[in-house]
Length: 166
Image (cartoon, rainbow, N blue to C red):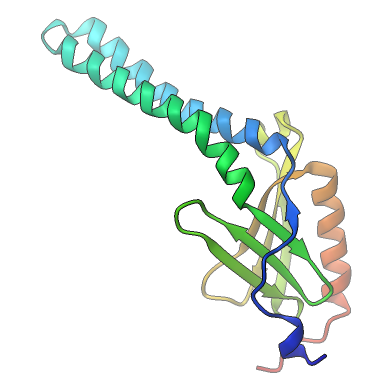
């Protein structure tokens, strides 16, 4: 098998950690909850604009709750990742799906990030930086121990992979 045969676009086979659904839901609730609260408080304080502000708050709340209920489950079904000795494969997106491949020979750095919400859900994000102008490949929603092991594995594999001559 040649190098060109080994790295080709194909669906990655690993799902994210199930806790990613709760993490995404919490992020969406915060993203919509804060503006809803601001609109509701302004509606309570500004009597002339009260009906419009409360209608806007209600519409945003309904939309936000709908997104919170349905989108994370959908994202969980779509987002996939896989690491082989040749490349990192990632598929993300809902409406516009993006499939990315990072050949081991192009990887420059591997980072693990855990924001406050990720820490609460015991999750982490692995960021694989390459020489690509498209930017880093991110695998979000991994168990934090799996993410640490994955970062170590990627570091070992890339250390033993000769650089791309192109």
